Length: 146
Image (cartoon, rainbow, N blue to C red; front, top):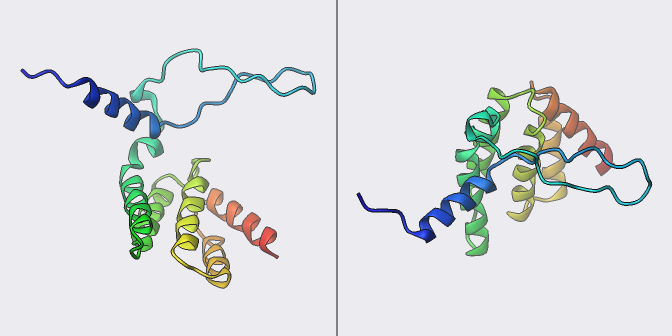
C-alpha cells in the first residue's frame, strides 16, 4: 500500500482544522488587563464535534466556489450558498454557531454586488426564520442598520 505524502498529510490536517469549531478559552483573569488565552487542554476528537461542524462541508464548498468566482471576476453562485445555509439552519436551528453561516451568506451577497436595500430585505426575511438563533441575529442586524 502506498503511503500518503507529507504534503497530502499536511493538507488533510489544514482542511480538518479549518472546519473545526473554535473552543472557548479558559476563564479570563479578574484583572482589567488583557485576558489570557490558552490552548485547549485536550486535543479535539473528530467524533465529538457538533453535527453542524461536521455537516458544513457542502456550505464550505459553495462558499469557497463563490469566493473563487469573485476572485476570478465571475458571478458567484450566492444562491447555492444560501441554499446550503438554509439546510443547515433547518437541521441545526438551536446551534449558536448557525448565525455565523448567515453572516457569511450575507457577506458574499454584498461582495457579489447586492445593494443595501437588498441586504436589508434579506435580513428581514431571515428575521422570520424558524431558528431562534437566526431570528435574533437578523433582528440585531436590522436594528444596527437603522
